[in-house]
Amino acid sequence: MDFVVNEINKRLHDYLATDNQGIRRIVLQAFVKMKSLTADTLHRILMERGFSITLKQVTAMLGVIHSKLGILHAHKNTYDAKYEYSLKEKYENMVLKHLTTV
Image (cartoon, rainbow, N blue to C red):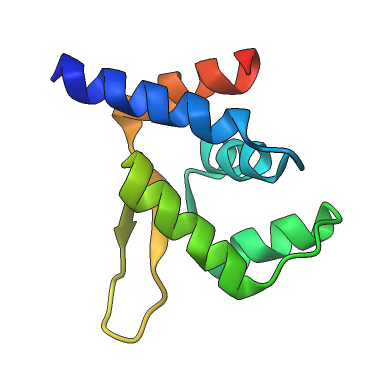
């Protein structure tokens, strides 16, 4: 288990270190604050913050965070519902630590 946590910790650090515009930081802050988001909601949040980003780019970013970092849980309630992404509880403190240090 320690290897997995260390690997996620390293990947999260690298992911935030290459964040030139601050968009990744805002995405992770939104998950810490709101707990569960859809791609549409996150897209709206980013547009309100002044980022020029498409919904397709937001869904790609969520896919990377979900699959490469492994810190998000994706679920949908019904077949035609949109995916809701939420930060896994066991990684919330790790994300908070990285958001305050990087």
